[in-house]
Image 1: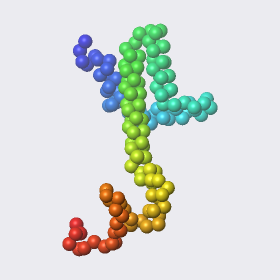
Image 2: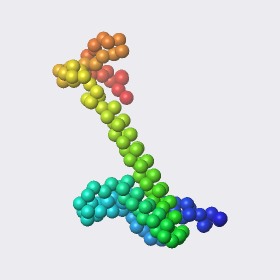
Image 3: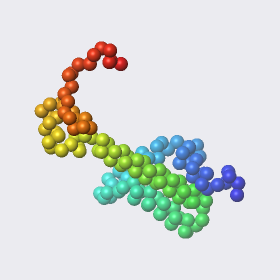
Image 4: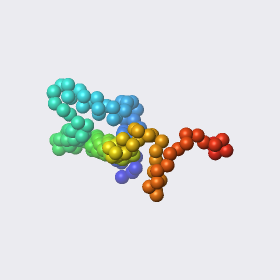
Length: 143
C-alpha cells in the first residue's frame, strides 16, 4: 500500500491539518462544545472521554454493518485526538501537582507561618543559626 493511501496518514492529516480542505476549528473546542450540547440535551454529565468513546463506538458500529475506509480513518483520528487529550490532561495535572509542591505556604508548619508573620525578615541557614537581614544592600553589591 502506498503512503498516500495510508489510513493512519489520512487520520493524521485530518487531526493536525484539515479535513479535506474544511476548517472545522479546534478539535479540542469542538469536543468540549459537543459535551456541553449533550449535557444540555440529556441533563446528564458527559465527559470528553465519554464523547470520544461514543464517537469511536459509532464508527465501529458502522464498520460492522458495512466496511468503508472512512470509518477506519475516523476511528484512527478519534483515537489520536483522545490520546492527545489524555496527554494534555496528564500534563495539566502534573503541572498543578508541581505548583502545589512549590508553594511554601502549603507546606509550612503553623509555627513557621507564625514566625514569618511576626518577622518576615527572619531566615535560617543550613547551620540552623538565625540571621536577620539588614534591609539594605551596599551599592557595590547591586547588579
